[in-house]
Length: 142
Image (cartoon, rainbow, N blue to C red; front, side):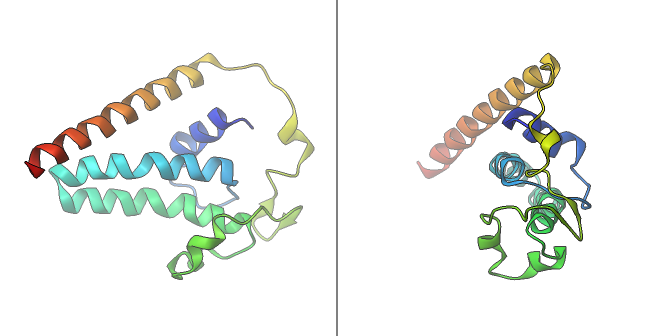
């Protein structure tokens, strides 16, 4: 699975799915794009933005912990942050087969242009959002 497929799957297909496993290549791009989205909501509706952030944060964190053989409840542990960087457990664990160490994970399939277009728009919106937040922050500082 390439980076575009991983981000697309994590952001749109598996947003509320806590079962299964999530590789680092799927987890980290999602975690990079989530805070600017939540900050934008927090600027307008602070309570709603915080709730949306927590809801969208839980599923990928639990799947990432599943990938290293940990229960999802470990996300409440203060040191769980360091486990996000650990490599996947090879083979099958209690949460399913490893997405990294399976032969079909490396099979080549034709590119789907709709995913590339969606990811390009997401990247563009992320940049616009980031610049907007910087402009708002600079405006309030003055």
